[in-house]
Image (cartoon, rainbow, N blue to C red; front, side, top):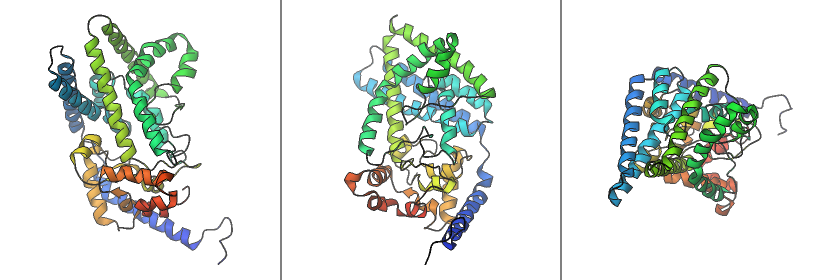
Length: 375
């Protein structure tokens, strides 16, 4: 059979488009009532995680703290701070939660020197169908053929995160107020929350830019306070803060490599179902999953097909979709039974040492075969 002429649609393409539209219609219908965000739940969750993290920070920095208690407190601080910081993702997708965003900055974003302004311009490109999974996507990196090497690189770079944040807000931020060239040329390239490096983040505009400027000043003041603390008898507090941040970055890297995407870069972006096929849902509720994937982050494929859903609605949305969609659907094919299987999925898909890319993708054959090319 000869191929369809250029500019026409083949029967197979038409059938696939019909299946895709039907699947998206089911997602919209079954999740419509789950979209409202419960602001009170956000406040309780953010406040509890943040206060627990900073209490553990103080215990770990206590001079006479026994070694066992210090280690346990550091681990607790990193885990709770990680949970609190992951709300940065929710705040981007729930812009109407103004009070929650202000509270989050006060309790977490500013003290950790990881405010929304480092994430907002990057994440915007991650969901756009014309930039997802391309060189324009700062949250995406090509792992095909180098998954092990890139994982090691990311884990090593985590060690420099505290210093990078102190330089960003303690030095480059103030310089940008004096020298426009620093703010225009250097800050967009430095210390954004990206996987791809180097990467130039687009500028924020309007109300978002005005809010970011205020938060930038607050972060600078906190960075200066931390630097002063190093030389005024409070080095233990600053060192504990730095170790906790390294712990947060490490947890996030492990999560990103195991339950987000397959990280196979393309020249063109992907639509909602194309992103879903490239993403992962981690089934189960094991302790490791709860630690590495707090606030619904184990449902990453679900997030890309329904990005406006609040975190507290994701488990119910996933249950509904699994019950309603056929096993061969793009959404159902995105699930893995555990984080370990998620990590193996990336390695076997991307690393030639495990076989050719096509053979290794067999662990996720459904979404790979449904979306062989750019959407």
